[in-house]
Image (cartoon, rainbow, N blue to C red; front, side, top):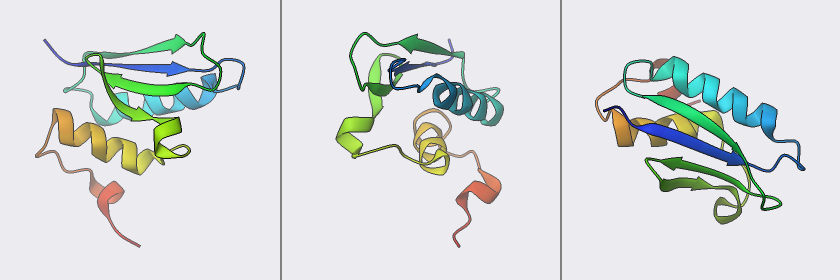
Length: 93
């Protein structure tokens, strides 16, 4: 069974589009590795949390803000497909 990511977001903060964008990027990158992504509107104000099989892998408050998509992709890759190259995402400026 492939892992599933949940993204719990605060709808009052307007983070649905951010959640959808992250989901799209992850599903495009990890087409074969992920079983899906679920977007969950949170009842907790200000929450933005990502979980992989119920384990928190990103929390906006703990992180001190939003992580960029590069960091999120690398984090997910390290958990679901360690040997998968991410191409230009991994290049340093």
